Image (cartoon, rainbow, N blue to C red):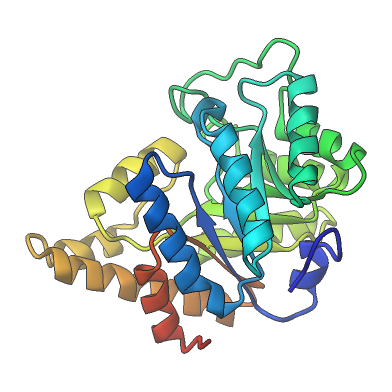
Length: 296
């Protein structure tokens, strides 16, 4: 475990022990809040390398993100990583948010450009007085001195990227600006992840890149999200899931099996760990852990 400002996650992940981490999002209401903390309680015994808390489109959940990460830092044994985006904030506001995180005992951040309020495929317009790119936010957080910084990576390319090579160049620039680890967007082909890693390594950067995992529990929902963020669902997976159409429990079970197979392929191929998009629930992640023989 890492505490406070100690070793960077890049150093921990690079040590060779497999990293397991979980992502949560700020809930909308009291019921969602209870569900979130139930999930955190269920997953805490697995001693994840870190847990991250997202930042809503357009910066909509700033206060909740700050509050949840601070509470995790104060009340649990977990290492929180707070998301921070350029969207909707001036440079001065971003500096103030970083100061608030530090005062709450949160020294690890995910520095992201972020999605416009209308979604990831909407036209990007920088906030007046703000930052234009994630690399600018990395530089800002790095200049604060104590922060350890993670960034996003995109195995199939960011929706606004002109090519996979250009996308790799962006990740390399973020690493050279001070990012110490990266977490990928969800994907469903291990080959896409390994190709991304290879593109980055060819450019002389060895930043640890954690694959992001989201099991398919509802094919239509995953397809919609994939269209937004530029992630495709392979035909072979669609066929496997569609074979159980009309039976939600069997669809769910097949989705868990597919995710576990992907995790095994990634770990066998040398991925430094796995980052799970939990949707504030623990059950699916724990079922995947059961298949991977991950124990408390």
